[in-house]
Length: 435
Image (cartoon, rainbow, N blue to C red; front, side):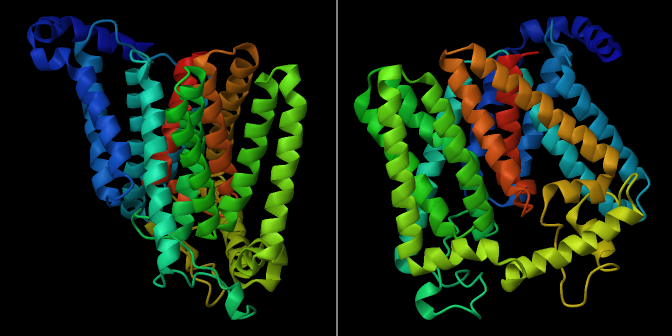
């Protein structure tokens, strides 16, 4: 690869600098500390501040690649699809009618993909850190879960009315919690909790395997609290994603159990499903929220999304090849030409439709190809291995599935709190599976 030849040239040129610099020899420690800080501050910091940590990681990784001998780029099949996706995004931005607005959105895309590259190059040399990053996400899930429960008991009212109350009785109105994530939004919070839920479960599984039962009990308690917090968000997209994650967790758990325990697990899972159905049916506010998923045009939020989808499909038809350019500001300007009166929107409320509208059909196909090959290789790895790293890959895979399913009905996926978790999970799969 031509790029690796350039890196090799600079590495030979700067070899003496690297060998004599204390800071450069500790650069992996700096990158790791910065990554940990990014995920911790994500639960309370504004988007721009989170992005600063990502940019700093990218800069440090670039310095490492230029100075440390032997560092190079290796592209697997999935990475090649990501490269194609990036190239189509670049072409889309260059051809956008609102170039400067699109350029701002493009810089965000560069930051996200750059952070993914930083994660891959850091984790491939520090695979043992994967466990601690997932534990950190589990701790963040626990903090946010306790915050959500506190908000529920306070009956927060600032954002609790984000639902169609025109057809609801007072007892059917749900208090929607939103945690500490900025901006305060129950759907963003639901999407974030969905993305870190498998990490919370892992906090219970890992100590159990090593015989630390008290820590395991705390971990499983965090997982259950996280489940409860997702329910309290009232985010219906997160409910659908949670359903998929629970199914995947059940399948993978059943697979690793000894035959003597499989019947017990099946019975326990059946009881859990029955209890869940009973709770949904008997709690008026939860029942109204869940059943509104199937109301289609009968629910104003659903109807709003359908109107946005129709407008975005028209946008896509007119810009199917290369899209309109990146970014929500660019999207809003163009969307105004297509929207149905009274149905202004910040996004397409579907990450796949959003990608197609912004960057065109080929960018969408490339991104789906990137996802497909990562998921395919993760499934193969889990099927062929039963070690601790297979647990990490399983957690990453479940998290990715949850985010992608939620993405069918919302675009909080593009918020940095969720987007950075997504790239971490994909990087874990990339580093552990390798090919």
